[in-house]
Amino acid sequence: MSAATTRTILHGDLDAFFAAVEQRDRPELRGKPVIVGGGGPRDRGVVSTASYEARVFGVHSAMPLRTAGALCPQGVFLPVDGAKYQAVSREVMVVLRRFTPLVEPVSIDEAFLDVSASQRMFGDGAEIGRLIKDDVRSSVDLTISVGVATSKLVAKVASDLRKPDGLVVVPPGDEAAFLAPLPITRLWGVGAKSAEALRMYGVRTIGDLAALPDDLLARRFGKNGPMLGERARGVDADPVGDRDAAKSIGHEHTFDVDTSDRDQIERTLLAMSEGVAGRLRDSGVRASTITVKIRDTTFRTITRQRTLPDSTDLTEPIFRTALALARPEVRGVRIRLLGVTASGFGQREQLGLFDPDDPRRRRVVEAEDAVRHRYGERAITRARLVGSRLPAPFERDPMTPVDPRSMDAPDDPSASDTAPDGTGRDDVDGRDRLDGTEPGEDPLDA
Ligand code: DCP
Ligand code: MG
Figure (cartoon, rainbow, N blue to C red):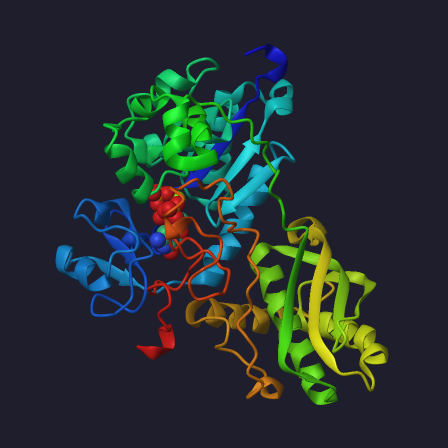
């Protein structure tokens, strides 16, 4: 690879994130097996995460809490404090942005960084990895494992290899040799189904996969097959920040029956504004532009947009703006579909020199977010929305995007983009969920 195309990519992933935050905040829990998720060892939910002390007993994420209780009866079981972890996550992302503007958060506790252009200022990839680890420790008192490589794919595998508190550097040119001895399941995007299918060809390690002929891979895995082979050889040109697709966050609703009822229209706008504001807060961004979309019974579709004087992540200004935009357009018209979208994002931290919002109001909103994260989107409902039968918000949160490069076997239902419950949210590996319940299970149903 020529110097011009050699990139330096870091992947950072916090260690036992939820449990580590709890151990940080309650020093008496340090060194103890801590299990975060649901209500406790008799709860029907699942483990969100376990401290490394608890992992020794075989406890891991997504395991039923009752199983964890049986394996580790001396474990300290704690509920999920989603709002707290989101806040810590944002602080960590701010630390990462000190080293490069090219930061791509992948989930609540991990991100890719392209530091190719930062090396003159901070040193080489390994040095930046060390600096990040030191900075995360001194800023938020947590450990982060870091992988350094020439691609996102290899950096991600590297960060996972020496957890906790790892730093693994893969020099340019060593990618294929580094990956070769590792089990195939370490390769990002190879799920259980693909691993099973590959086992039929005698593939156990990434090196075994790299040696398979492309035409065989194409026959078995379709158009993604040859890409699988390339990735096994450590080839991955995907740029950092490329899927910062969250340039906007929006909700749409199609009425069961087209309506001109003003109250129903306004309640729908309120519900969608609320959903959009919650997603903005979860993502740590504020939006400065609000767009409404209106489709009438004849399918005529218009959009109306307005830029706010101050960017926001709160329901009220979004709803007020949506209402002002929609009101003149919906009068006397039968409406089929409504949408509310927020765009023009800035990071909350970067805008946060002074907070234009009432601090008490913000505390209330944060408390609501905590309940929403724990019990689901519908747990807090404004009086005006009761009985409005609106669908749960369906848009993704940019902090926890689905890996769009997931290349599971075509017959693997987990490779589908749409969750079985039709919400479009990625619950496949539970990363999107903060409440420690089973996918599709209603936490209030316990
Ligand atoms: N999480 C969850 N349910 C899962 C997986 C994860 O709720 N099935 C949450 C809890 C984790 C956090 O996401 O703390 C980050 O996920 P990781 O996979 O990075 O796991 P950890 O950070 O806990 O541990 P590790 O040290 O292996 O990264
Ligand atoms: Mg982690």
